Image 1 (cartoon, rainbow, N blue to C red):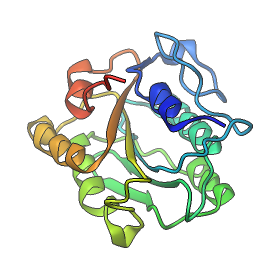
Image 2: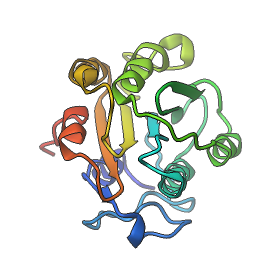
Image 3: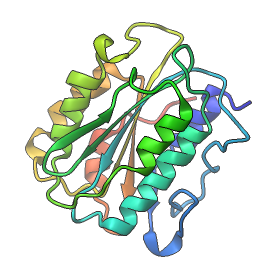
Length: 209
């Protein structure tokens, strides 16, 4: 079984996904090589509340969006999904935010993986700050299955974006609001032109562990 600390170590590496170096179905290949995400045969036995915020803007492009979906699929496939174990929520965004499912929508892994596989790509605009705000104010809520204040269930948020947001003026304050609720926020840059400054603004500081 893969420990929670190792899951964090895998996910916390700042990576830039180069679509020229990656072909599906594996998750996006980083420019520096972290350990691979957990697979279906190596499941994490430490429950977490895991939120994905997925950029489907035109600058990401359909090919990179498919790589994002492959990455999310493989991460989920390596987790023990149930009401009492790991819960997952996902929001897809461009110039508006689409809440695909909440923490209490899917307790069955197969249904959750189907929802990821069937997630469509709509390329238009990028409002990352708005997406962070929606996840903070709607997804990270008890009525949507978030286990707030329960020490046994850390909250990990993974943001996958090319960092070309149109609402940069709001990114700082909405990032701070998200980090006030989440245990860890990980920002992963997609494509060659990912904006590192935005990723740094979104993510929590690297762990000292």
